[in-house]
Length: 82
Image (cartoon, rainbow, N blue to C red; front, side, top):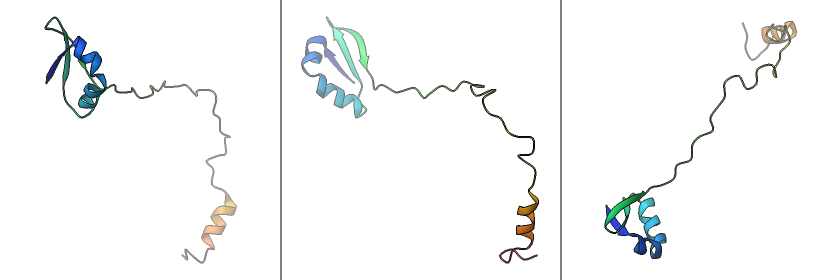
């Protein structure tokens, strides 16, 4: 952990950022009193809202019914003989 006074932090900001990104802990102080800690910013993920598409998606009543033509093609297939 490195404690840096405000004036030094202003002049060495790029160097301090590199140290924080590499995992070091940096504290900035004023008048020898710790004020803040430099930390890596972490983006929050997109928060999902349940039910956002309610009423916007539909399916026909027969969408999950098995198509007779497809069943016949599978039953008579040479790739998958019975």
